[in-house]
Image (cartoon, rainbow, N blue to C red; front, side, top):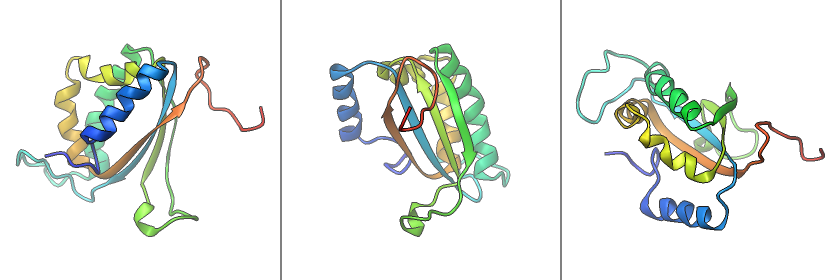
Length: 147
């Protein structure tokens, strides 16, 4: 069963839905991913020794299609290195910034054919994850703090 380390709990989901009521404008979702060394499927299927990173790509290909289908775009993706501020348990392997045209568009990812099935690969791949909604703008860009 997916855990709060990889999926939102009810309180987090409710808070996000409440935020939509206040502002359904563009949003950038900052994704922090920590991969398992070897993927583990909850349903017991054999991952064939595949790494979490390789297994995440099975999810990622479908997710990218769904994001584009919703009018969103991956703005930036890179490997993460050890934190310079924070604890060791704050370390992640990958950082992605994904722009969505609205906060509610993010919730419609599951409307894309095959997306829900692909979530099994995401869950098998990730040791933990964090997805942080950030204020977005109508422009699909990342900005510096001073213009």
